Amino acid sequence: MTIDFPDRRRVSPWRTYGWAVAIAGATVLLRGAAIPWIGDHRALIVGVVPVALTAYLGGLRPGLLATGLIALGTLILIHFTSTLPLFEKPVDVIQWGSFLAS
Image (cartoon, rainbow, N blue to C red):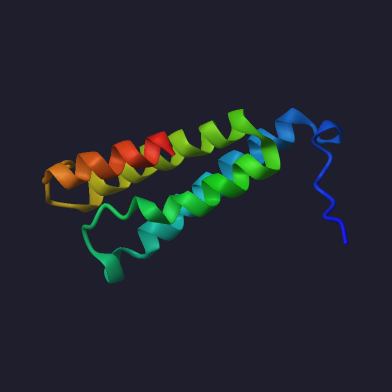
C-alpha cells in the first residue's frame, strides 16, 4: 500500500497562501471563542496543528505565514480581551518562543 502525497507543483502559490491565511484566521477565531473555557491563558498549543497542516499542504513559506499570523492574531486577541499584561509570567515568554520556533 502506498501513500499518495499531494502534488504541490500543480497548486497555485496564491492558493496555498490563501489557505494559510484562512486556516490562521479560523484558528484565531476559535481561540477567541474558547475564552470562556480557557480564560486568560496564553494557550498557543491550539495553533500547532493548523501550522503543521498548512506547512504540509503549502510548504515552508505558507507554514511560516500561518505561524506569524496565528501568533500575531492571538497576541492582539489577548491584548483586547484580557486585563492581564501580555507576558505576565516567564512561562508566557517561553511559550511564545517555543511556538514561534516550531
